[in-house]
Amino acid sequence: MIYGHSHQYAAYKEEYIQYINPGSCGRKRFNLPLSFVSLDIEEGKMKITK
Figure 1 (cartoon, helix red, strand yellow):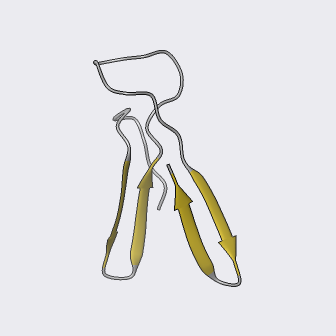
Figure 2 (spheres, one colour; figure 1 turned 135 degrees about the horizontal axis):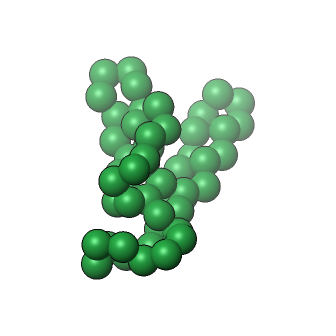
């Protein structure tokens, strides 16, 4: 599940669901660091790079 709007990076798994919030790499807001996520899927395995 990829979601957003909070402008804050998060990546966690609950039960069998992987949740990813890439954060924000646009205009800096709310004194949070800029961030983005690269998601690679190969042979059924996910690799999340912040």
